[in-house]
Image (tube, rainbow, N blue to C red; front, side):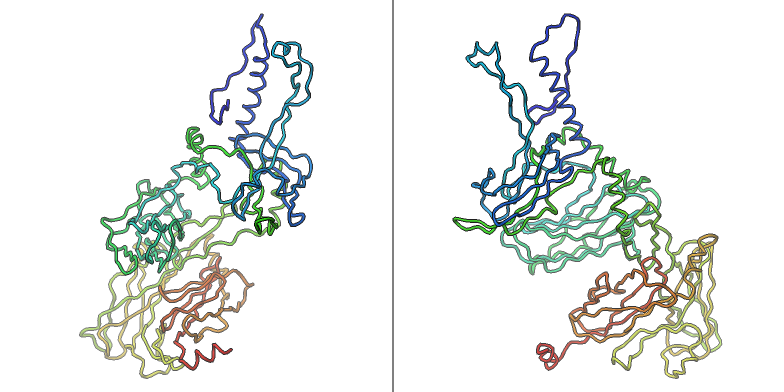
Length: 602
């Protein structure tokens, strides 16, 4: 049973022939049933609003609360049988308020009612006793920023490690201590300011993730947080999504060498004393199973230490206050009121949920195909579907007619049927922008009628070693080489067999193209990249920058140029068909003084 908010062993009456029953025995009988029901309420449902209890502002000084039912942190049911109107100044706690942000709370309350004549009470001088106990409720107000008295439950669900700490800042990394095979898990980096007057903070690190892939399809994450200016107690966090490998790895770690972490506090560069390491396992369990296990492991003692709330917050009320009056400015329920999900409302939840679309998938990385099953909204780890890279073939001593070959190159797509094609990559000046741009020619370069191409003309071929997951590129020189090295861009596409081959067949003839593939922007200027669809219905698009420090682009295709000049590449692809993609280019130039003045006068 629960006594003084502490759980004790439950005891109930044991009956036997001839037992003398007193009022104390009947009280034990009632308390056993009441406390057991409240204990189950607390453990099975938690606290919050079951139904109703909406809060509305009637006028500048009064609120109305709808009828409804709630359960508090002690498992007690609170039923408000009809709508209630109250002036805020008449609600307990109003006189003690110190701010303009106020919480309206609902609290369980009992009172003894129906007095009756009691014979035995004459001995104590009181002739009457209340015959019933009525279960009721009351409202009270408290400052929204005042501590609530309930601590967080301690759990081993998250693995947390301190990356850096000094007198000004502390940086911590956290993610689930166990990830699910082939599924995504979120990595959080949090910076907390510890000093009243702290300098600016910047972080640049390369975190190695042996059992996980980043969104870029690599076993590492580049983490940056630049020029943070925080006050004491303020926290800033940033999240990255990692995809676990398809097989269990019970002893995996996240690693960052001390030389891979750069911390700048003000103008002072700080170094890590030792390498950073955080243990994260990959298990052959679903996310639901991992979450259920983590919650199920929380002991009763941990729950007791965390404490229970004896009230249910209904709304935050924003007030405009003067010395002698107040006005209700706004009533906020979202983020304050917590709802209890019950089985009785399951059918209605399903019906209402059917009016919302399925959540959009996260953008797929260039070299990773992400698939979503009918009952699984998470991304699955799979073999990469396509990849690209650069190979160099030395031409020292070679002449026209010779055949030159590259070393064996691993394409990273695993064993199986893979199509590989190579093209000549070179830099040339773009006459439209007067900037150096990267170009690639696949096939016969003579078709482009450019006699001064900075490449060695050659016919090319590729030998794919299917069982080794690699290939060898070869070229027959059609002229004496003018360079010491032939630079080839290779593109590899994995060709699925059997049922999976239909994936590529569905892409036949489908394409997308940027309406404006090349734009000229000033630094920090923004542009929206719109797309045309060919032989396909419009679909959700994924936008990504192909190189670091090349500006920013939002999920809906709004690109913001960086602060430095250059030519920057943006890859646009279909979120559910990443092979259907195109590229756009932003030519970034700084404005002249005259252009700045003209822009300011617009």
